[in-house]
Length: 628
Ligand code: MFK
Image (cartoon, rainbow, N blue to C red; front, side, top):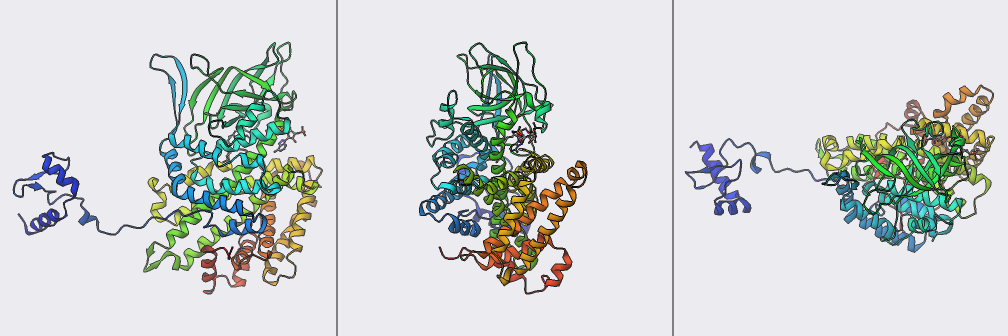
C-alpha cells in the first residue's frame, strides 16, 4: 500500500459516518464502496473520486427568504402613508411570516410535483382526472382562510380594500406555486357576477368564490382562448351555445388554453344559436356563459373531455388544458352579443393580478439577491461591498419600486371605483392604466428577474435553487391576459372610445402630482425630467391626432411605455414628497428619472459614475423602513 493510500485509509477510518457503520455491522455492501481485506472495514479505495476531504470544506451559504412584509421598506412606507390600520398591518406581517416559514416550501412542492392528467381508469373508462399535488390543494385552503379573494368583496378597509388585498397577494405571489392564477380568475369571475347582478343561477357560485371557508371555496376558470381565436377572440371563437327548452344552453366547441382547469366553475364565451341554428359572426355574436364543472353518476365530467395538458415553458404548477366542450350545460349571463364587454371586468381584474405578480417576482429576486450579496464573498470582499454590484442591484430596486407604485396606484383606483367614490377622472385613469401597468410590468419583470439571476452567478441557473423557475414563470406575464401589443392597442381603443378623455385624465393627474413637489429642491431634477417628458408626450399626442390611424397603431407600444414611465416617475416623486418618506425614496425618484428618462451623458454630467455614489446605492438596496 502506498503511503498516500495508507494515509487516506487512516483518515477515512476516523471519518466514517454513522450510516456506514450500520451498513458494516449488517454486512451489507453499498454500491460504489468495496471491502478492503487488509482493513476489514468499508474502504473507499484510493482512487475513489469523491469524498468529503476531496471536495473541500467550503459551502456557499444560500440566500435566505425572510418575512417579505418586514423586508419591504416601500410596501411598509406605502401602507403607513395610505392605510395605517393596525389590523391590516398585523395581518400582513403575520402572513409574511407564514409565507417565509411555511408557504414558500409548499410553493416549491407545486413546482416539483406538477399536475398530471389521468384520462382513463384501469378498465378503459374515460375519467379525465387532473391530479394535483397536496401542496396545490393546501394553497386553495390557505387562500380561502386568508381571504385572498374575500378581502376584495368584504372591503374591510373601504376604498383601500383592494390595496390591502393586493398587498397580501404581492406578499403571497412568489411563494404561491402559481395558485395566484386561479385566484385571479376567481376574483375576476366574482367581479363579473357582481357587475351583472348576483342572482340565480350564480348566487351560490358568488358566495363560494368569495368565502373564507375552505370547504366551501370555489375557484373559477376563464375559458376565452380557442385554436383560431388566440387574442382575436371576436373573430376566432367557434364555440356554439345551443338553447334548451328550459332556457339553459349546451356548449359545443374546443377551448385551446384553459388555465387552472381543476376549477369548480367557469365563465366562457360562445355564440348563441338562433331558432334556425344560425349564429352571428364577430364580436357581436359572442355572449357570456356560466358553467359548473361537475361529474355525472359514473364519475365522468359532464359535457367536457380533457384533451391533454399543455407542455409549457413555465407555470408548470398550473394545469393548463385543451378542452372539448361536448354539450356542457351552461347559463347565459350577459345579453346576447355582449360577451366581450361583459367579460372585460374579468380582464381588468386578471390584468391587475398579473401586474401585482410581476412586481412581486421582481421584489422577490431583489430580496434574495441583496441577502446573497451579504453572504457571498468574491475577490476578497462581500458582493455588497463591490460598488458595481450594488449599482446593479440598485437599478433593479429602482425598477421594482416604480413598478410597485404603478401597480398599487391602479389598485387604489379600482378600490375607489368599487366603493363608489371614484371621480370621473379616476374612472378614466383606471381604464387607461390597466393595460399600461399590465404590459409594462410584465415586460420589466423578465428584465429584472433575469438580471437578478445573474447576481447569483452560475447558481442562478441551477434548477434546485428554485431561481430559474422565477424566470420561467415571469415569461408568461407578458403573454397571458393580453400580449404587449394587444394591450398597446387596448390603450388606443380606450383613448378612441373615450374621445381622448383618458389622456386628459392622465395629463391632469400627472401635473397634480408634480405640483405637489414644487419647492422640494432635492427632487427638482426629477420633477423637471418628468415635466419635460410630459410635455413631449403631449406634443406627440397632438401631432399623432392629425395623422392617419396607421401612424398611431405603429406608435402604440412606445406610447404605452412612455405613459407608464412618465406616470411612474410622477408617483415616485409624489411618494418621496410624503412627510414620512426616507432619503432612499428621494434617491429612487431621482434615479428613476435618470435611469428611465435620461441618456448616459446626463448621468455623466450629474457625476453618477463618481466614486461617491456607491454608498447611496447600498443605502437604497438595504433600505429599512423609518420607525413605525
Ligand atoms: C397571476 C395572474 C394570472 C392571471 C392568470 C389568468 C390565466 C388565464 C389565461 C387566459 O385565459 S389568457 C386569455 C386572455 N385573453 C385575453 O386577454 C384576450 C386578449 N384580447 C383582447 O384583449 C382583445 O383586445 C379583445 C378580445 C378584448 C378584443 O375584442 P373585440 O371584440 O375586438 O373588442 P371591441 O369590439 O373593441 O370591444 C367590445 C366591447 O368590449 C366594447 O364595449 P362596448 O361595446 O360597450 O363599447 C369595449 O369597450 C369592451 N372592451 C374591450 N376591451 C376592454 C373593454 N372594456 C373594458 N376593458 C377592456 N380591456
